[in-house]
View 1: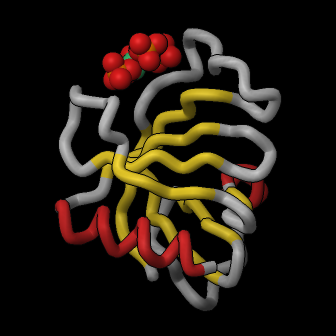
View 2 (view 1 turned 60 degrees about the vertical axis):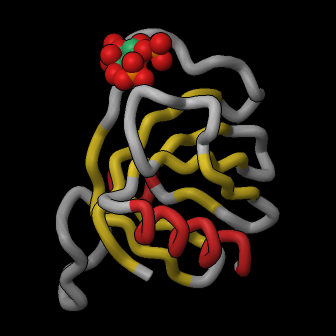
View 3 (view 1 turned 45 degrees about the vertical axis):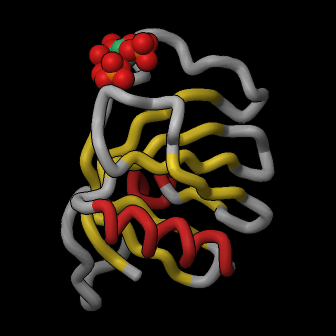
Length: 109
Ligand code: I3P
């Protein structure tokens, strides 16, 4: 599964609220491959290796839980991802259908 997702980091690895200045929305080209959600700056090009930044942004979705972010009302089509290491990430998909597909795919990993 691939597609554009806007990400907001809500909580860091210790489960604590991400500090001001690091809570903004940023759009990535997301690629779910195996148990890893790669968040790339640009659209995937098979011939191009992942940059260091792309690797830093990658999220393990192994034992993670995705659900509709029902408590987040500022934007539509937002899903919440709770990772096994207690991070909380919000992702805005481009449509309701896309959001549901991402949730299903992530939870099936
Ligand atoms: C954040 C940015 C986010 C905003 C967040 C701000 O500032 O403006 O868009 O979230 O509010 O802290 P920064 O880029 O300096 O981290 P929303 O879009 O959800 O309002 P928050 O701290 O209330 O989450």
